[in-house]
Picture 1: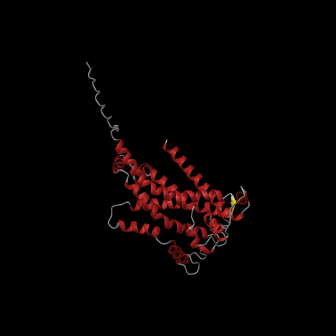
Picture 2: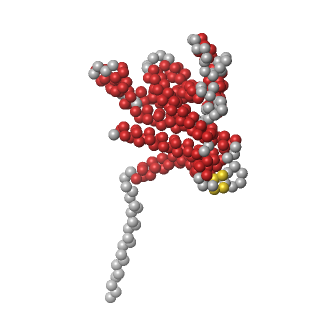
Picture 3: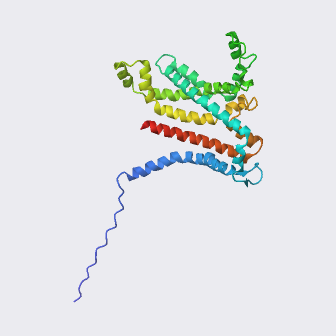
Length: 312
C-alpha cells in the first residue's frame, strides 16, 4: 500500500528589510542639503580652489604666459629678498591695514550706535551711510580726486579758510597720498560694517540694559559692560573680514593713484598686477601672491587664537 507523501508548504516570502524610523527623512534631508551645497562647491572649486593650486605651482616656475612654465624652485622667493619695490609695497600694505582697520572699525561702530535708534527717518540716514559701499569705485575716485585737488579742491579751500596756509598736497604728495587713500577707503567701507554692527546691536536683549539701569549704571558703563561684550562675536567677524579686505586692497588705489606718486601708494595687490599683466612675469607675480596669501592666513589664524583665548 502506497504511503501518501505530504508536500511541504511553500516558504513564505521574506519580508522587505525594515528601515529604521526617521532614516528616510535623514536621507531626504541629506540630498536636499547637497543640492544646495553642490553648486556653490563646484563654483568654488572651479573659480577659486583650482586657480589657487595653479598659482601655488606657478610661484616656483618662470612663465611669461607663452609656452611651458620652467621649474626654478625657490628662485622667485630669493628674488623677493633683494627686491626693493616689493619691500616698499609690503610696507605700504601694512601701513594701509594698520590705519584703515582700527579707523573703519571705530567709525562703523560709532555710526551703528548713532543710527540704532527708533526715530523717524532713521532708514534714510542708514541708506545714506551705506550708499558709498555700492557706488562705482571709479566715480568715487574721480570725485575724491577733485576734492583732494591741491589748488582748487574743496578740502584745501576749507583748510585755507580756517587759517592753514600750507595745506597738504594729498594725492600729489608722497607723504599725504596714502592718508588720502585711507580716508576714502574708510569712507567707502564704513557703511557695510555699520550694517553688521547694527544687526549685532539689535540682537542684544533689552532686559540687559534695563537691569544695568536698575543697578545705577550710566551710559558709559552700559556701553562697556553690556554693549561691547554682547558685540564680541560681531566685532570678531568684522575684524577678520576687515583685515583680509585691507591686505587685499587693489581697486581703489588702482583708479585713484595708480600706486603713485612714485611708489607712495603701491601695495602688494597692485604689484602682483604689474608683474603679471604688465610685465608678463607670472612666475614672480605668483610668488608675491603666495606671500600675500600667507600674510592673510597668519593674521587670520592669530585673530582666531586670540578670540578663542578670550572666550575661555
